[in-house]
Amino acid sequence: MRLNETRRICDIPPAELDDYLAAFFLGTRQKDGSDYEPDTLTNYQRGIDRFLQDSGYGFSIIRDKLFEKSRKCLAAKRVELKKHGMGNKPNATDRLTEEEEKILVDKEVIGRSTPEALFNAVWTNNTKMLGFRGGQENRQLKWGDIMLKKTAGGLEYLEFNERETKTRWGQAGSSTRPFNPKIFATPNAMNSCPVETYRQFASRRPQEMNTPDSPFYLSINYTPTTHIWYKKNPMGQNKLANVVKTMCNKAGISGKKTNHSMRKTAITNLLHRRDSPNSSAAVVWTP
Image 1 (cartoon, rainbow, N blue to C red):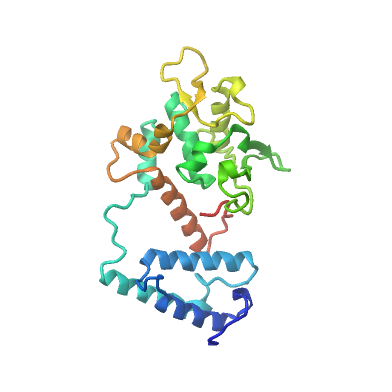
Image 2 (cartoon, rainbow, N blue to C red):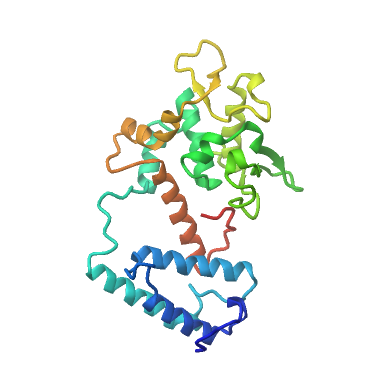
């Protein structure tokens, strides 16, 4: 290995890059000299792999045999760190399992039968499928940010168009996604189709609140007397901040569940697809 490497990472041949990565995983430290958490090192590996794939590198440091050495070094480092008690986070948020999500649907906590169930369904789809963070992005979402479109073949989909403004997303352009995430309709499963759920959500809102700059999430009318289920004012921050906790309490699901639980579930599902050698699923958002 060169001690003063100047090449771009995507210009380094696999055999050399494998050596660099092995040394990195074994020796990298935080600024204060302490070790990183095991999951942080794994996230670095996945982030490097995404960058290389986006750069057209042609090899995966997660899957290809050419990078077996660095993977073994990372695995050994994780074992070493865990022996020293790292990686154990008793107060960490629990992710929602597939079984728990099914409970939420079976108990109609997520669904279309009530105003709150419909809101929960839309919020869940946005968070899981568009990759929203549970807090700020959902609070600042406007109705016009998500648009219903069709492919050339006629398949409907929802597309998130991120606004680059300092007031809504921080420094303009600094944290925007490199592409617009999409949610595709599932015509063969209309009961859970995210596009149909969105369509029903739109029909239950006051029509004057379906303008591009209207808040996406409106306060819920829990005892509606008409087909309109939502009020003309935005949903409160406390309600939006505790969506998953409220859902799980209603369904009798235990554990430390927060909005971040849904994001953990989305990231886990995404990484499983990326790591599967037989997977052809397209990645539609980046964590």
